[in-house]
Length: 201
Image (cartoon, rainbow, N blue to C red):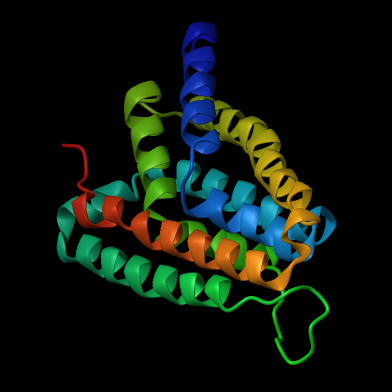
């Protein structure tokens, strides 16, 4: 991968990771409900999951969907089911410290695994590799993974910090309830890419 291609991939990664999507909706909700520090494992899990997707996409995992097209429908079904469940969990979240809620921030492993049913993460990995690493080798794939990792850290931090910044204003239960329902609705709306997702030929 050339220096110019790496910079272009950094720009692509920045544009796709900073813009609203399932990860960022959940990060801002986690920042509000649990604070920045408790959201760090969630942030690191996103980075790990996206990097693993980029690497495996470069190694040819997308070819499995072309060989067996129903696999893409299975992915879509899993994405819809899991994201609807997450939306419900966000909507039902209560203020930190309230008894009986059982609410916990997403763990590193959970956040990493979520990327495998996250349509935006798949689009990022497939699009990034296809456009900037058309003939992947070990070095190019490593650079692609580094590009996404470098951008994921400030992106996830920004969204989680934004959520924590809203904590004081959302300390009123009714405001927090409205916020959580709004985040849940936005997460459901972000399912649209799942319905229209197709693999590049």
